[in-house]
Structure formats: C-alpha cells, structure tokens
Image (cartoon, rainbow, N blue to C red; front, top):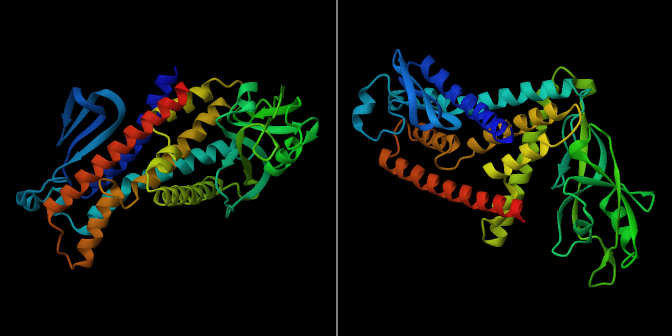
Length: 376
C-alpha cells in the first residue's frame, strides 16, 4: 500500500507539472511529439494528431517531448512548430507553466486541508527561526528532531517527531525549559510525557521513564536535538487561506534552502544540503510513517504532504540551476538582454548536461543517506 500511494503521489506531482508545459506548448502552436505517463521504456502508445500518448514501464511521473526543445541543429529554427523557433516570451511561458501548475495544485490542496481542519495547519517543525507573514502563529511545542551519538532518549524509546510535554509533571514549552528540568538530573530517573505530533489528530500522549546522561560540564542531558513546532491559524482569512499558506511555506522553504547552502559553503561540502533534503527513499519513508498513523486525519496528512511536495517541486524547478526550468529560463533572459542574440546552442546543451550530471549525483548521495538513516 505504501509503495502504491508513493507512486500515485509522485506521478500526480510530475504529471501536473508536465501538463503545464504541454498545454501552453499546444496553445502556442508547438508540436508535442510525446506525452508520457511513467518513464521509458514504452509499454504502449497511441498517436492522436501530432502527439503520441504513451504508457511507460517505470511508474514514476511522466514527461513531455517538444519538437526542438533540446535540438542543437540549425534546421529546427526553420520549423515553425519547434520550441527553438518561438519568441523568448513564448519559450519563457512554456518553461514557467510547469511550476505554475504545481503552485496552483498546492494552493487548492492546502485550501481543502485547512478548510477540513478549522483553518488551522497541522504542526510545522521549525528548524530555522522564521516569522510567518500571514496567519496567526500558535503554540510552540518542543519537538525531537534527531539524536546525539549516545542518547538516553533514544534508548528509552523517544521517537523523532514526538513533542516533550512534561518532565516530572512539570509542563515544558521550550528547549530551555527542557534543559532546565534535566540539567541536575544526571543518573536520576525522570518521567517524560510525550505526544506524537504526527498523530496529533488522536490527541494521545504517552509516558516513559529515562535516566539522563552527564555531559562534559556535569549537566544532565537526554541526548536529543530539539526544535519547535508551531501551528498557523487562518480563521480570519478563510477565503485566501490556501494561497496565504502557500506563500508562508514558500517563504520558509527559501529561508531553509538559504541556510543549507550557507552551511554547505562554510563546510566546503554538499553534505548539509544532502542531509537537509529528502530524496525518493526519504519521501517513501514519510508516506509509510503517515500510513501507520491512526485517527481520522491520515488523509489530511497525506494531502498536506502532496501540497508541500508540490510547492517544493515548484521552488526547486524555478531555481536558476542548469537542467532545471529555472536554468533554461536564464538562457532565455540572456537572449533578451543580448537583443535577441542566442547563446550558442552547443554551449547551452553542455551546461545543462553537466548540471544534470551534478543533480543525478546529488540524488544518488541523498538516496544513500536516506537508506542509511532508515537502516540505522
């Protein structure tokens, strides 16, 4: 079931994106050679008009093949139905169309999720400080994000995603509160009350006992890294809730991505980026975790994930990086700046080729990281 839902989610996101390219290309008279469901090799296909509509073996997403999209041949320019023969404005519109469709999908799905939950979001873990522009920020639970190498919390069964509600019957509302309650408790058993925010619909809590370890300064620690989680309330902006929440999430994604890039530059390594981004295996694991929940909001959690992934796909695709829509858009803008003079097609093709090689390498690295995290 997890694999099926994972494939459906991924396919919907990619097909919506590709449909944006498809519909705008068709509208502007560009020949669409193939619109594929899944990735090659092709299982079967049917040609309707100028387009082959195909079903392919690998059930992940889909693709659109436009005449002249990646063609470096001069002859493509003379074909009035080729991508390269069109004006910069038309080519830019086609490149942006996929991202636009993902944004629309996110807004619509967020609107439905919020309307089904009294216009309040599910809990949002904040790994970087951020002030949301829209909505009312409510509550701030202390959430377990990961473990230290030696972790009393992990050994006692605390799970990533659980919020620490009380320690020894004393409510805790922040990371400092947690530190205050355990600093003089090394070697002493304490009672910790937890609530799994991933199962927040049930409102269930559980209690565990653990014995904090001692750090180098002699203070008690439970061996977990913590962050805070908030909810956003859009009750006074119901009509535009989906749009406003999409804006908030895009804004926070930008802050997160900027921090990851900065960390990578400071460390002279891609490790911070690969650690902070989930690949296919990581997303599959998230889907599996959601399906393991009980309670009526499992569907809402899945839809929330779909909307977040659609936003992420839009955000990453519009980045001005080679091989992505944003990278191709850069060359269109350069053409406009140069008064209609195009950059050498061979040069552009090589830039996108090496960009794709880098991205595939990063995906492999992220996948290995996700697999290692799951196995460990």
